[in-house]
Image (cartoon, rainbow, N blue to C red):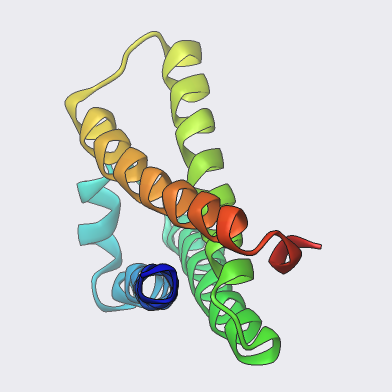
Length: 142
């Protein structure tokens, strides 16, 4: 029974890690197909083409870089754990700074609430998988 649970956790861990890597890659690359559309969806406006280029550089570079880092960690470590840790920490930091930004501006818009709900689900799944893995195999984290 323990082996079955551990095997299921391994499968879910890999599914989570690969899913997060795909999420980061698609999210970053999708910007390249419609820069103004992406800016509008997140309610940003670039003053000129330099602003659009900076947005692509920061957003696409960050998201694609995280996706590639996730896949690279999985490949070299032969484990889903470090990739899941990376994704969970990054999404958790998105949550923290989304809230900090909202407090600084003085409003938590429905757009921000929508992102927060999705991010909380992502972080919760990562934390649960990592916690279970640590309980079953504490040496994974040493």
